[in-house]
Length: 128
Image 1: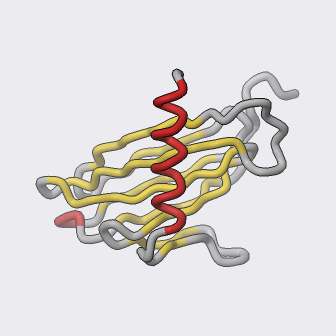
Image 2: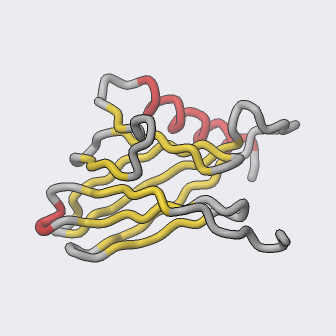
Image 3: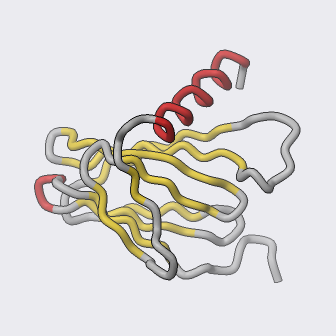
């Protein structure tokens, strides 16, 4: 990833976290939440943090999620990963990290809301 892409990802990450949009995060002990279109989402995914939002695109939920290293993860350079899902109404998509964290994203009828569920931690690849 070149320096322009790094700056673009950093700007997008900052824009989502600093704008006046309401944000959704998991309350202590909660395993699911609901989002409205363009409502910011903030999640912890093991060694990564994620910010994102969804839009209603022709009746489907279009989820955009940007993942970066968490503040406590030692990194020499900034790296971001952008993930996009198109989720048809009444269907779900899952994201599972390499370190055993997972989330399920579900689109409601007419893409009026996106549900986000934290999945039970599973064994990560390579762990015993």
